[in-house]
Length: 168
Image (tube, rainbow, N blue to C red; front, top):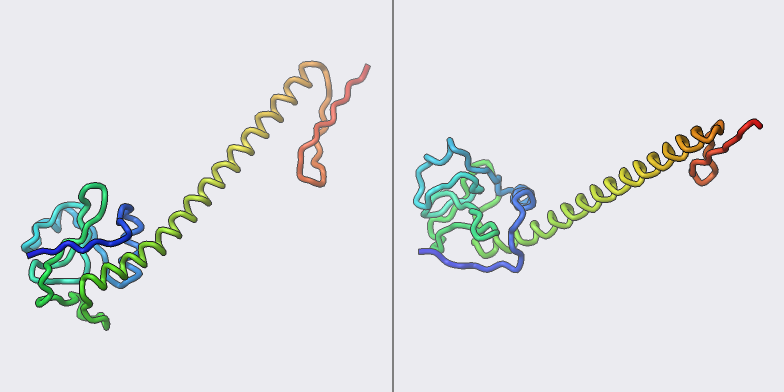
């Protein structure tokens, strides 16, 4: 038997989901070709994300279906437990677990967005520096072609100033 539990947050980015599961102590683990042979009722696929939670079907997992990660679990939580014997955390119901994952996912997603914004800022700054350098090189080449000698200085604002002089 299975159940559908909807969350307000769709889990669409694997890296963010892994970070959220790690933050909750679910010990996420990607399924590789060597793990596919593990015995459990819900067959494993390469790319699934295993958690340390277990139920009647075996380890609870997330599977990528229709552009989002979906948790695969048994709706009867009679056999629910945490696999890690060193964990102080007890088993919590799937609905509560998904609510916690949703909150952790939103937090990890905010960090992910901040990282993307920072990467974009760095990229734009590098493009700006490349444009400035290209303009500088073009101005120097044009001035030399016209017979000027060039002295380069930087003003108080950090702007490049080219002083062109020509002896007549």
